[in-house]
Image 1: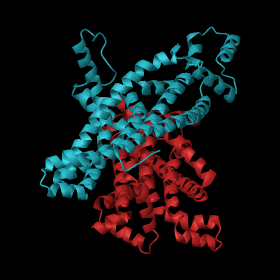
Image 2: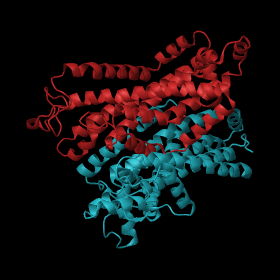
Image 3: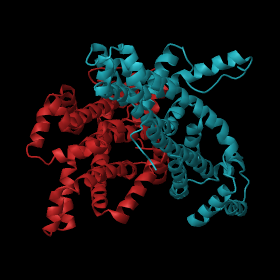
Image 4: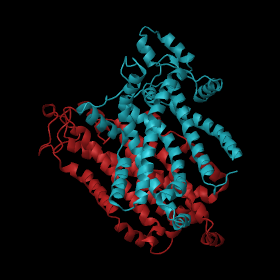
Length: 322
Length: 301
């Protein structure tokens, strides 16, 4: 197993390299002048100065030269400097990454916990009215487009009912004390977290249900039952663990999807996370920033794929990786 | 929704069953019992017909501005009311449906064709070609899809054709992976050996045996793909990176709608309901097809 993990880690390197090449090429062919915002701030800039700035930032380099420069910079630990925000990219991303993690991890945790509970109920009472309604709701949940659900929640819960703020991240001057600070932040998180959690719950519930139903049909469960064990013991001690194997694997993959997918929800709610930052960077042709965020997101996806495979092998003793 | 697709041995089982005579008749019989899937099929057909035909008979154009009639509530003349420029929302929703559905079907069909051919061919040839294909699949699976979609639609610019191209670029590898899985399972079957021993060319084996036999799983995947493509198109158009106005799509109808939800909440709900009902139908249809095409589920019932 350690050798398998090590090998997978080594395989990540060429993969990340190719991804960076593709993403760089895509970003470099983006239309729009990255110096536009600078031009607006400095209207007195002469054409000569403008040309010098372009040379300084290497904007007229051919793609392969630009890429090699970028790669060299990154390998020496520097992800570049954002022209929109006039800050090192890394300093910009770090606090936003933290915000995104708070958002996605809470949605993930709530979504998966609900899905497992509902899935267990549905598998223990299959074809009952509640099972049918849960499965119906699951279909609704993964068919509703996230951005529209977000929009609808904003209209209902903030515009009409005034229960939650419509967007943003925290009120100013709310850091009077620790408790108030948490309470304030939590209110801003409710709607985006719910929006993301709905699709998380929906996509996993069916999975949990079918996986547990399959396990319950196995001989060793019949055996446990014929030994006279209570249904609760059978479920908690024997059935649950095995039925969670595929759920855990799929969940690792969905965490990666969530981090990328939060781009849309963060934009809808104006939540200052990494995804919103990426969206603004793309709209403002801020390549360096967009490139760094895309690489970070790709890294998360690859890492989650790796975790999923490792967890699968680790949880299911029938699978042997070498 | 990776989880609604066939995986591993199941995939091969379905593909093998698809070879047997009378399989499609059985599938149809089983599918007919799935009432929700049938209802979804009828709904989608009705939707396609109405977005194709009804706008011809409507008295308004999708971009017909009438500033005296802004934000009208629903009435006989305007069943869904009018928007901030006095355009008829019913007309715009149907026109938007043309765009969104066209994107969905084109993406699903093109990525199915491209993916099926690439996946079957590389899976059958094996060796370096197969290896290369798998690396391409690896790369595609490591991309944060939505984020890359945003970048690509900025690069290629909005518009229907570009959007379809970008979506196919990201989706076809999933189909290729699926088709490859099927082919790896059936290329070791004796009948393929027999065909090869009989001097049948690789192209012919691909066309006569491998492609038709991977149809069953691919149809399910194409159905779900169409839904996914519509979701992606509406999301991008909503964010202003997909279909540019004044052309309407179910996504860009929502872009401005959110600014007017006090005056006209219907502007948000109508396009949203269209998207939602369509995605729901594609998912239910895909689910029904999946159940109908899996021979093991049939034996149980």
